[in-house]
Image (cartoon, rainbow, N blue to C red):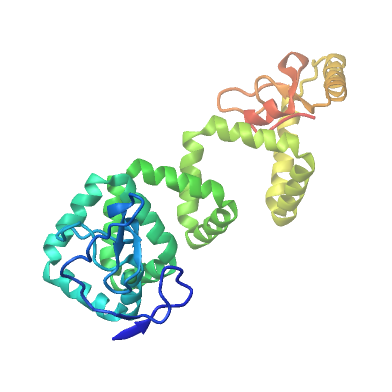
Length: 318
Ligand SMILES: [Zn+2]
């Protein structure tokens, strides 16, 4: 095969034809002694016959001067012209020495971890689409094995996986809300169980945060109560009667009405001056398992609404 050098090559002689061989071997071109003491720093290419600096020739250990006879440019031109044959040749050589090559590669990766990581990154950046496609295909064809691998990985790297999951959850609040809602809809019984368990294990916390929410959102609370009453008129009526009865039973003729009204005034004063809702609370609840408190001034105290709601005995005398 013959080929003209591109005219743009500054080192080439126009018109010289260069024989391109598939595998170059054999003796090196002779070193050229040039005037001016440059001596062995120059060498003539056996293909294009241009005299070039030694850095223009790649290494060939078995040759006399340790360099290839043809220059890098000629080699490149030849490689481009015979790319497919080179590729086949290298593939065949690789197949013939597969195991040995693999061992060598593994050793190299072990000896050069940083360079290996860099190479891997570069390869991934250049071929990410191809790699993703290949991985997706593998997963689709090996679902069982993929699941097993995933399980084993999670077992072996518990902490790392937990951290990664936490990071993902924090970064995707909308998706989390969506998935949670889906799960709740699909598993209503589980949800009830979870809520019940959480309540028993964290009673104080739940009562506290519920009370805080009610105290901070009085309109919401009124809405909810109104909704409950309109949806459960029977229960609402019964509760009303119970509450009235309880209060009637707790009221005694000897109660100091004036002292009681002073306490209610104090509640209004604190609510206005502090800007925080306060309730009049029965120290001993009107309804309790052991004793029933009375609606008398020394069983009354003024406390922030949030604390009263936390008591959860369901009754405050407002
Ligand atoms: Zn050349």
